[in-house]
Image (cartoon, rainbow, N blue to C red; front, side, top):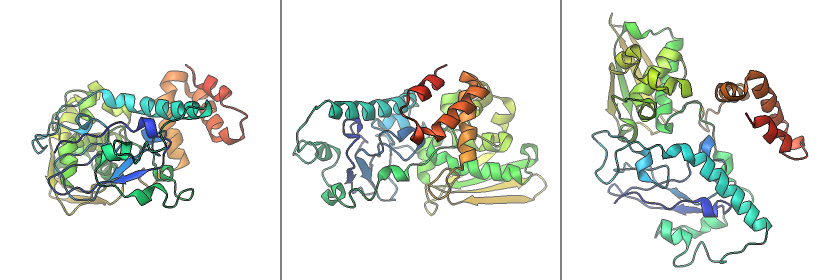
Length: 329
């Protein structure tokens, strides 16, 4: 069946987890995922799925967003790459802020908005674990499972990029490579199997480009997904050397990469959990580096540094007015 889950924004203040049982012939969606962009909405309703393979999967309310035009994508999933993911952080933040403001000003709603026959949980799934509403209430916070993405692309590509940067650190050069043997979970190729991306947006849905960026540049930020980089001759040549094979024995969070050199030597890296995951979180220095990479071109390095300092000291600030002012271009 196609993936279709309504937006979670309206209930972003409810720490509710709806468990959905899905077999091999169904697909489930998670909105939001545990990434930086979802901090504002992570407390909303989340569908939990088993690790079984399914024909399509979505990290948003719209299954078209997370799909890629790889041959293995199920017919029920739109294969095109959309621009709408760029709106997700703002939409999540707006929903969270709106919910708080409405509550502050006395707005009310049905006390059974979640569990009523046409309530939110019933719409999301017909099979719910209602104990999730109160289990560990006040003790377990879903936001604590959020992580920060070091790379500007789909989360399933991150282990491959991580492996590529490790190969680069070992001294592996693109010109010395005969081929790259990449083994990943089938879902990785279903979502990001675009072999010949034509622009930066398509590049974000290409595990092939992700590897090339990681090896050539040692990073995969916004700059490495610029149109000119995605179509650059040396980048295209390297990603065409990547031979990706789906492997059910490998976790969605992992990647197994072997670079076979022209002289017969092999360099192997296996990533169980990529940098930026719960198991391997980014350091404060990593976060500051990513922030500078995004903010410096907009407000300058000095102001970005001052803004970082303001963020680290936010808990001691009387309000956020000064911080907001410092963030304006």
